[in-house]
Image 1 (cartoon, rainbow, N blue to C red):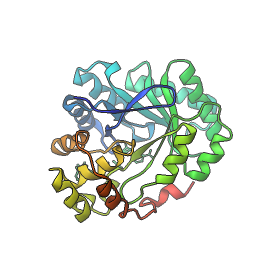
Image 2 (spheres, rainbow, N blue to C red):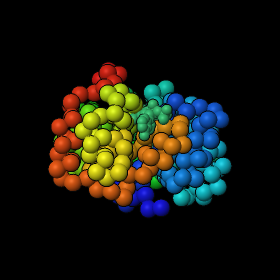
Image 3 (cartoon, helix red, strand yellow):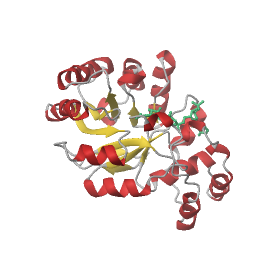
Image 4 (cartoon, protein in one colour):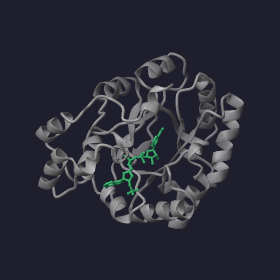
Length: 271
Ligand SMILES: NC(=O)c1ccc[n+]([C@@H]2O[C@H](COP(=O)([O-])OP(=O)(O)OC[C@H]3O[C@@H](n4cnc5c(N)ncnc54)[C@H](OP(=O)(O)O)[C@@H]3O)[C@@H](O)[C@H]2O)c1
């Protein structure tokens, strides 16, 4: 299956559709990752904070698909708040995942010690422990400040992005500087009932797709990689099946009208 990719600023290809693993734990996590890969998923997103790296690694091995066919993302977070601690955390992630490198290594949130921690991500890139590095939850203000300090331009900024919070201008600003946007909560975590939204349902019908598929397609068509999470096989299949239909300009325009330009997750404004 052709899953479609976006090219990062260092030439690495990142799949446009992947699996998020937040709140998947234990055996369920291993099984879900393995099942998803069996269906054709090639991007798996985890983080130290999710406490499931071991199970994600097991799921990848259980799938029987070769490691180098999978695009694996993990994230280092606030407890590793120095270059040295972040270096140790990166090694701990590789150990938990049982891999020699990850494809994308992110700083999970903006922290005052972010630039110091990011230096460890730059080390990891140079040492072959990551194929690309980036940031997550960096708002416009944080992003601009960070860009003035970092050595290597973040390849990715993973952000809350969905039909209710579309971030067109920020995407363009980052694109000009070499940073690709990736959407977390591309289905808004179920808030606002995207799956039952009338506009999305109507548009979806003309393509024989669901409202959720239409919401994901809207992002992918903008070149935004999406990492929806589901623990159900039917939805896993549904969320991957978004790459072989095209929304018209008029449909894209209609979906733009759903933008509330406001976060659904107030914790993202607390940094
Ligand atoms: N960088 C960060 O700070 C950050 C923050 C949050 C998330 N993330 C990453 O992004 C991933 C995705 O975000 P998320 O898990 O928060 O939210 P999401 O993917 O937008 O939504 C997940 C929710 O939607 C449901 N769902 C999935 N597919 C569906 C479908 N086709 N129709 C209807 N409902 C559906 C899931 O339920 P079921 O499981 O019951 O199907 C779950 O309740 C996370 O798993 C994580 O990897 C990163």
